[in-house]
Image 1 (spheres, helix red, strand yellow):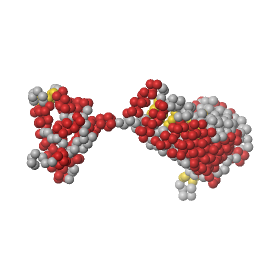
Image 2 (cartoon, helix red, strand yellow):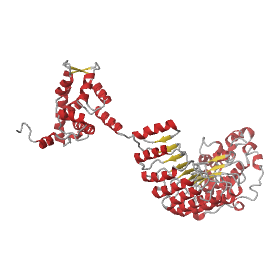
Image 3 (cartoon, one colour):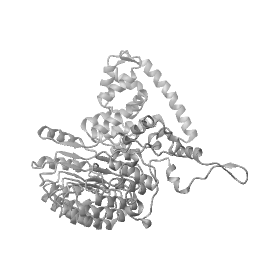
Image 4 (tube, one colour):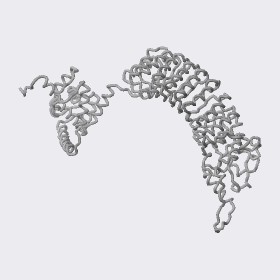
Length: 610
């Protein structure tokens, strides 16, 4: 069978004597969804077909639209009605549909109004008949997927009525194996339709009803059918507003199921009671291989019950417990569970308030487990020392099967990276982490931040900190008295002065000083720049006094603070008003610099005071 769109294209050629507009044709809505709005098509038909009558006032009017036919004129793919739990009633085939509804032959397909090629499979014909009986607009997307193995209807907002039409069409369907109705506003009433359909259809093995607000009543109906038939292998009920005591709904399903392999219950509100119910049931199950309990409120007794169930379980391979609250109690119980478990291969503990202490407790069990391969710990406050502890423990434990550890954006230190590189040469290990945080990196960032400032200003302020003028600093670096400085002379001179910059930063500074690129810096050019800067500095000071601006917020104050910070970090102490000889001597000895004023106070009166 061809699709509804292709079939409708051959309509005119097979029936040349029939005028499509002589009667309202629902296939027009499927045929031309992009050409015109279905509401416009329906309104256009009624304007041409409705009889004209003359009112008492003499004004010619058209017949009003029937209230019950408003659903036919909706310009969307399906009915968007949402029903509350109070008026929830499952569909009754004897009441809602004719007695011979499912026994009808293809009379409509053989009629001249609808060619045989447009009828399609039995499920597709059931879908069209159901939509006609329920007075809702059929959806071409649903019609087309009824003939495929996977019926993916995510985010289509079918609503309860649309879910009802799909359920009726799937009652006798043997093609669809995977039904995905995620985010369709199915609600409690729509869940009842799906549950009643599953009692007749034993071919659907993968079912997703995530984010449909099924709540307790809807989930209870779905879980009961799946438990009784036991033919579903994958079930997704995430984000359905399940509360604390709803965990008991899954106890019998988890304990008794023999075919369920994958269960997703994330984005619900299971806490202690819900965790106890699910954890106790896990101990009796050996068929579920994938379990997703992320984005719940599992903590305290709920977390410990889940951990105890994992210790007894003998079939689970992938477990997602991210975005819960296992913390210290949960990690202790999980450690003892990992000592016993022999099947788990991948566990996700991201965002579970796991700090270094929790990690140490967890490792007591992980080091005795030989089957776990992937450990995910992102978004946890384990700190860089905790990351180093984990890597060092992994290096000392030869029997561990871990080959992938995810620390998310956790910052680490240099020794961590060095150890990881050594371990990767000996074994296959992947480690995901954040920035490398060490003193070298921090110093480089501060140095480059300083070098980006005005180079003449940097030399002036550095000379002031040494007790030297810019001319004195220039003469000290000019060894051959040539009145010019080469790049090599500036670099060696600044290094001799113990400027708190690395060679890389000094090269960048010298490059900025050599503006003309001839490799030499003239004393006159440097002096001219110095005078120009002094005039600018005077103007800045005057403006700061008038506008009450702090000098630290100006260019001069900013450079001075950065220099003092770097020199204090290099020498290990505070640097304020120190002399050149003092800095040179102490930097060579590795001592701590003190204020010269305090030095004079401690050593007695100065020569000038004497």
